[in-house]
Length: 485
Image 1: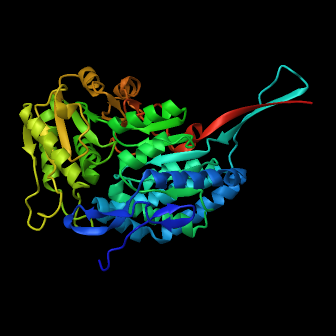
Image 2: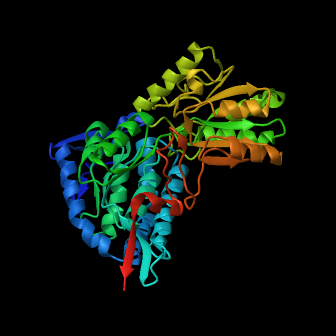
Image 3: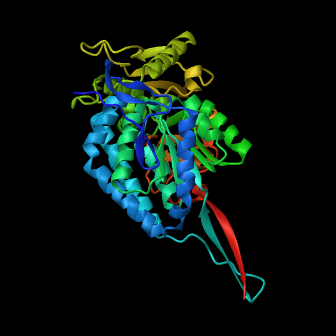
């Protein structure tokens, strides 16, 4: 890789070392002995500096027209597009997903930027009839001010951009804390904003540990909105901090997503969706399939087809063109997944395949876990209740469609859910009765289009929605105006 580079914070239009002068290495999960680069370990003082810059920039940014702000987003998209392969490769090296997946994610980021650039030309209010015939009454939308953006490592381009782009187009300025595991990828994205000429202070990035930088963002009195994607444990803390200071907050906190296979389903289609939805990206998606609920009449046939398909999966480094599934993103995540597998065995689950480290030659240095499938799982078991975030599928046999829905809903999460059936009445029942913000019929659980609202129910979300035109609801406040002639 040549010389190992050190990446800096981006504050007020400049690249700065942290105030405490500490850095840490970003490790390649495909080879734990390889340091991809060094990133800043920052302090509360760095967050304060970034907030000062964002606060100073917010008035001028807010006063720009929506189309003028959109022009900046178009320019950022163009810069990102020119560097697509470079940024995708860094993503693969930092968190392990395959290069084609990383390229697809980066392309999605480009599309999101262009989508929201166009949103700058849409209406921001409505005229409302007044009881006073000599008055004009209407609504308009105004930005929150400074928005804190806290993002995870599993989608280090798409998730930051689907938060930052709408925040900017609606007139806010940003203090961004990426996951430390993918902070280099985030820095490359910030370089695209800089190259596009975004005014100083409008977008700022501070890297460091979540309990320091994330908490400082959540607590800062001059941050007026916080958008967070991550675990439910941390999300609750962010929400409590935001509530305590009166800031608006938006939390997306994962899922325990089911796929229901009805006895009339196309089993080949259902198997492919289960494998793709559950194991692509090493299962490290908040919308990944985790529970596979299958009616008893087709259970054995489905299981045989599923195990045969999983045998075909090639595990290896994400930059290898023959790899279908890469490593877990970090040592921490690797051990977390292994601990859940051990728990599944301890609680009585039957291991059908996988269950541990991949033993293939040449993969010893990486955080590789073999695709894993359990059966004889009940809804009360840990691996049927808690988010694993790894390549682990739990098969649950049921006797009826009604039982399948009941089990699918028997978790604290409600992000995404999928059903495979040819019966239109069952499709409608599923659509109405499933507790999930994203309902997929004859399609995998993982996937949402950028122009559609995204978010979950129950503990998966704080109730607001991201992406599409729904984003304006979080990033702005409504102002009602009454004018008397």
